[in-house]
Image 1 (cartoon, helix red, strand yellow):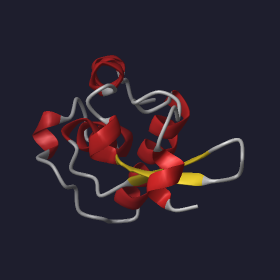
Image 2: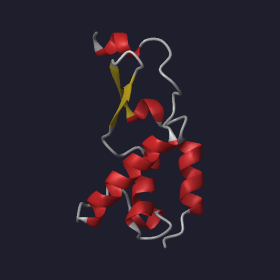
Image 3: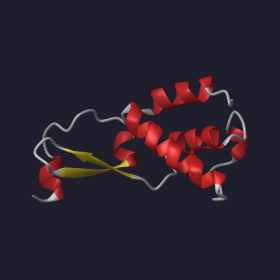
Length: 102
């Protein structure tokens, strides 16, 4: 089955799930901790904490990420972050506002 066939029809929400947000932010925060350069102006983040910077990068859509969703029949669908981000901005914005580094 081609990718376009797998993506047709209902494939769940047209927004990032909380699990996808956690995986993306966690992976990017690890990269930042290991010395990767930030892709946004860090003054936009509520703190210099790598998780806060990763949340801002996700909110602004600068991460080159593709989300793979699996269907019940075993087929997968690759979705660009730009397709899922508009429906998720409110959730991500709430996370940024409430983020407090520990």
